[in-house]
Each structure stands twice: as structure tokens, then as C-alpha cells.
Length: 115
Image (cartoon, rainbow, N blue to C red; front, side):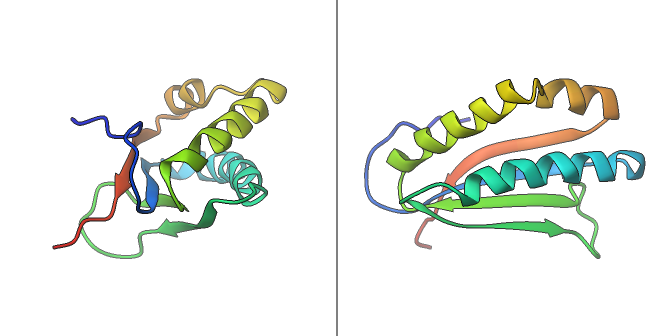
């Protein structure tokens, strides 16, 4: 796996998080995701948009996907700091929640490629 999150250069950067969420964990998961979404949407320059998607058909394993888009890598550090502050303030550990609720996550940053 490549770690290109600290590479400079032009182009939008996307955070794509894919989750397997048991039905019994859905409400708690979405509540926590909404809190993070609210913080992201308050970010200043550089944050473009976000989408939260739920699979409605198909064979895919991950059925909740969140996507956040920034104008460039330099804007992501501010968002990371804001999210870290939220987690500290609320005494919330996402990894602990994933383990406790049986949630599986695939989390990574992406950049657009020209095919």
C-alpha cells in the first residue's frame, strides 16, 4: 500500500471510508458519523463536499461509504486536527466502537487519476 497523503501537488484529495456495519450497530454508527460530518462541514477553505452513501443493491461487502473531498492535501491537516479535538472532547475512540460493535472499516485517502 502506498502512503501518498503527504505528497504535494495539485489536485483534489478524497477521503473514502467504507464500512461493514451490523444492523444492530447502524444507529450508533450513523450518530457518530453525523458528529464528524458536522465538524468537517464547518471547515474553512479547502473543504469541498462530502457524501454519505448506503448500498441498496449489489454484491459489495462494504455497504456504508463516506466520501470527503478537499481542494488539496494541505487542507486535510486542519480537518484532522478538528476531528481529533472532537474525539478528545467527547472521549470517543472510533477503533473501540468498531471493535465493540463488530464494524469493519476500510479507510484511505485517494486522488483522482486520468484514465
